[in-house]
Structures are given as C-alpha cells and as structure tokens.
Length: 317
Image (tube, rainbow, N blue to C red; front, side, top):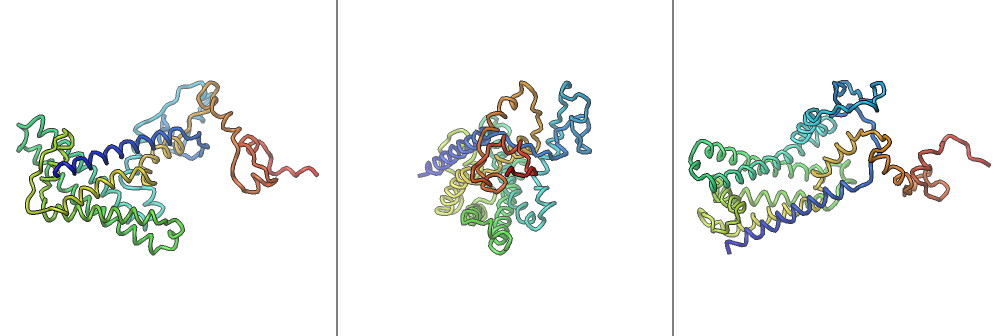
C-alpha cells in the first residue's frame, strides 16, 4: 500500500509537465498580436527605457543593430512575479488577498525544490548529512513549508470571500473560480493538518519527495498514526498539481507571452523578417466581430479592409 502515494504523485507530475508543455506550444502558435505601442519597453537598451524611449528615435534605426537588455526585463519581471506590483498599484484591495495566496505558492515551490535538493544530497553525498548545510536547508524548508501553507490558505479564503461579496466581481466569477479556491483551501488544509499533527519537522514529507527523485518506493518513517490524513493530503496535493495547468490558472505560462510577445513585442516589420512573411496572411483573415463599424453592412471584413478603409468618409449614395 505504501507504493500508491508514489504512483499518484508520479501520475500528477506527468500530467502537470504535459499540460504545461501543451499550453506553451498552444500560446507560441497563436497568431501574431497587434502592437500595443506601450512604453517604456523593459528590454530597450541604450538607456532609453528610463524615460520611455525607443530605438526608433535614432536616425536610420533600421540600419543599426538593436540594443536590448535582459537585465532590464528581469528588473520588471521579478518584482511583478514575486510581489504582483501592477495589481498593487491598480487594485490594492484585491492585492491584499491575491499577494499572500501567490506568495504562499512560491514558498511551497521553494520548499519542494529545497527538499529535492536535500534528498539528492543525502543520496549522492551522504557524508554531508548532519552538517551545517543540511541544518540550514532544514530550517528554510520548515519556514517555507509552514509559511507557504498558511499564506496560501489565508489568501485563498480572502479571495473566496472577495469573490462572493464584491458586486464588481460577480459578473467575472464563475463556479469554476469558486471551486478552484475551495480546492486550494481543502488541499492545503489537509496538508497543514498532517504536518502539525504528525510531521512537524517535515521528516516524512522530505523523505517522500527525496524518494520520488530517485524512484525509491520504500515505506516512510511515520510518527503516530497518520492513516487517512496522510493519504488524503497526498492525493489532494497530487490532484491539485495535475489540475492547475489544465485550467485558466495556467496563466503562469501565459504571462510570459503576455509580456514578451505582446506588451514588449517591438520587433520591427522589416523586409525579409519573419513578420513580413506572416503579416499578409494575417491581414487576409476575416474579423468575426459584430460591431457596426466592422459588419455594418452585414458582411464581415478582413483585417486588411478594416485597416485601409476611411471611417470618416461619407458613404456613396
């Protein structure tokens, strides 16, 4: 019976990996976006990003090599990912609920990575066990594990209450949104209950994660009688891991494209570029919008027709 949790976890990891790769491929194959023309662009080089400038300011810019800055992107993306900077600036009330939820997820991710590292070190460098490095890893795992579950539950409850009581969110809240938050609360709740009652030093959890990394299906050392709580927590966390990338919560993949391919996608459409090959085909696609300025005559238009017509021109009688 002790093999079942391992098999469930492996199945969840397989589904998670396949779903993330599938989402990435889906987003990468979507049609080219419309240019937003929003500045500053974080990867703009030559010191222009500071004041919202662009390489197009330079004389005959198309003849010069582009200057881009990866560091500039990281300076924007890392705070945005970790601290949800844009949400804090534009919706502070939502941020107070969403930030602890997301930061709790990051802490649990860090906890898992550190347990994997600890397990690999214990397997391949057993002489290090008991040393200063293991002691530091152990305490960081405890802080990230307990902190992540508590913050995740607190944030999920806050978001659930917000969605159920805020009139402005009702039209954007679906049954799936409610289910997702309840799922997190229940899964994290069972896991927190298990470690508080039976595994406060994360010994069993760390052994389980370490065994997963080396395909070792041995029974785990367990204090007390965890029984059902242990089994339910493993199954719930595994199902949650597999479920996340199958839903709109996969926005952690889409956010990369939203920033790099849309918001910061400023590659010019020059002769011979990939855009010059794609744009003609995209312009010939039909627009499915029913707005009067698009289908006022009852017939849809192509993007080329919509882009070249003069909306101010009076119709011929």
